[in-house]
Image (tube, rainbow, N blue to C red; front, side, top):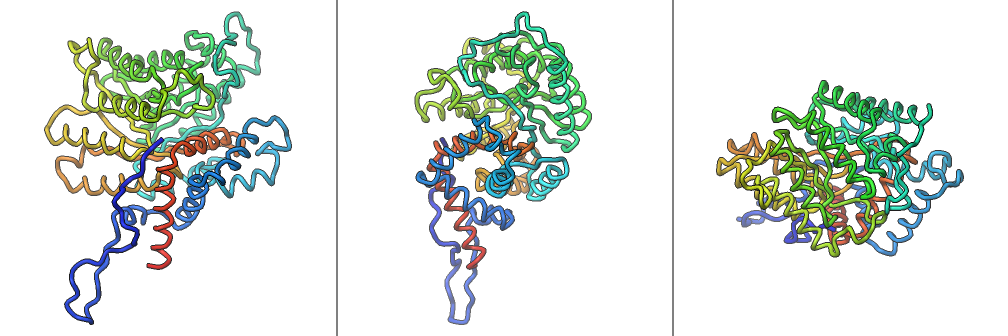
Length: 449
């Protein structure tokens, strides 16, 4: 789904700079820009990334790997339960889990977050991975009307709330918590399917999470759900932004999935409501993660259509351009989060943002993120560009901060997340080939010099 980074890199690992004046003169070597960026990564990450991306970029290896992960994700058998079968658990931890996930307990998560920030990232987006994926994506089985819930259902909400409060304890100022609302169980799920207002227990839980997040200097983003649920979740999130995103503050972010045909209209609606009502609109833009669990007609027909949708929405926020028919309104206070592994989309967004900064025009608060273990060559390149921007007085206070998104939870709880990440890579052969080659080149550079 994404394109590679720089297409003009030569295959060698060092360029000789300057002529040799005599045989005794030692050549001076400079590390290519991509290798310089990747030099931030520990060797263990380089090795694991090289191995995993090589698999993801090789169709005859990727297909059986996806089939196995799909089986483990969907199976109800205790023998195939990643949290009960010790062999499966260890294999998944050694291969994919430790590369993409933060850990199974607070101690592991805290250590992972420290390691990520030590690399230079400005923050993390941490989410508890427990969720629900609907088997019937049409969403016609909503059952909230007249449903009576028992103690077990309310206990599920309490446990979800506590899990997110525990997540906040592992975060620092400037970090994000990613809320997966379906993790709260049937009370939330049924109401979303039925298109109902946010149930009181869920609203109280979210308000408490927001209260604690604000005291810790963190922010909250609502992770996307399937389209059987997302329209209702959009309404819930907008109602929460009306309450919490005031005075220019962006505490709550909603997620918009650009692969949906209705994504641009949804983004425009967010902007217009905020402009009319006077609150801060905050959006995280992704391409989409539920392509195997969605009604296909809702999704753009081609990758190119999705790319255009993504870039157009990003440009609308960063250019502070009101939707057609609403130009009489001033663009609202806004915060925009570019969550993508597509180098071209990042470059377009950065170009738009920098032009406005250098021209002294109003700007939208802008940050970027990639998933831990994926697109590391892009993340490291952005960190390098950030360091360079700090030398420019006009850019240093306005260059986007770079984050890494990380799930945490048991291996079984994270399995659905890991499977969807693998499916995304199946449709991103060009980018994955580039990342695999970049990691192999970095490995050879470190070994051979």
